Length: 231
Image (cartoon, rainbow, N blue to C red; front, side, top):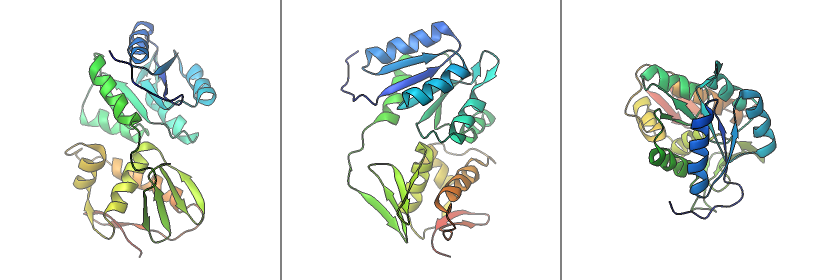
């Protein structure tokens, strides 16, 4: 594989209890020009997240009896905004929903396939071409370079999927977007059944952008979807 040019921030934390699998993933990442770090349990993983501030985190759903999804949820509660990929053995609707509701940005399936995994990593670590672009609606600004929202001079850190969701809404102001449109354009899935993934992420966004009592901008259109507009 050809090494690719990356800056020092492109460190990837692999939280995986299967030592052979972790080693295979680590070698593939290293050969592709990344800086992988392996943690074999949740305690070490949490420590490495704090110390390393990785650009991306890979977590196995099953960590030697511990829950990778619980770890993912805990990382989000800690304020971690790095993209998180979950390694899963099954691909049912319920599994996808559980993965996304835990705060993960995406998942990949066992058995491990090097090229598919590296393509996913590149997708989440790709550089932004539009470093100065911003989206604006009312008093809310979305900085596409820093991937932060700004409201009343307050910078708001967003996870990858929170950013993608808010960006999609701000690209279509005052347009009612159906749940199906949001799922397809933000998550890339045609449909996830009756899951409440969108509702969960809308709640996350509202908590962050209304933290200081600002008025609501993301409105619910009952039975249809959501719209970005002033009430």
